[in-house]
Image (cartoon, rainbow, N blue to C red; front, side, top):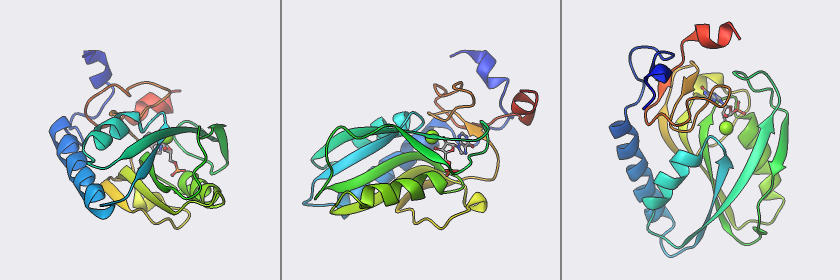
Length: 185
Ligand code: IMP
Ligand code: MG
């Protein structure tokens, strides 16, 4: 692992690899129980959710198909504006399907509330949200999250898929980025 990435993080990691993996397995078990006897379409929100998505799906014991969406929310790199644009839409129609949206972090809630509304117009049978991280302090719009891994403080976090300016996604842990990294940018 490239040690230089760790120098940009605060000394204390927020979540270790073990903590993350244990929690992701628990979430997979809960999803398996809740959807027993049903099929599921898991939708990965690119790119941040990729690491969480593959680990979570390996912990789910159900017939599950995969699809991907890419979304861009306008705004600066550490604050989202709530204006959302679909960069890549789902490959397959989702009418009559049980959809599980898999996201890395819910911050203001604007991205997922847009997505929920958008997918609901497509005649889905059910729609739930799984997020690895949740920053409830920053919520600007009410949003019900069905499966939440960890509540995190209002700080900018990176690793395990989460990026700053496309970096740090490949760290296996999650840490708080030193503010000087994005303040000087
Ligand atoms: P929301 O629309 O404000 O809920 O934005 C959620 C999106 O903002 C996430 O999918 C992330 O891409 C990004 N984001 C929010 N907080 C963080 C963070 O602490 N680190 C990295 N990305 C974040
Ligand atoms: Mg994201």
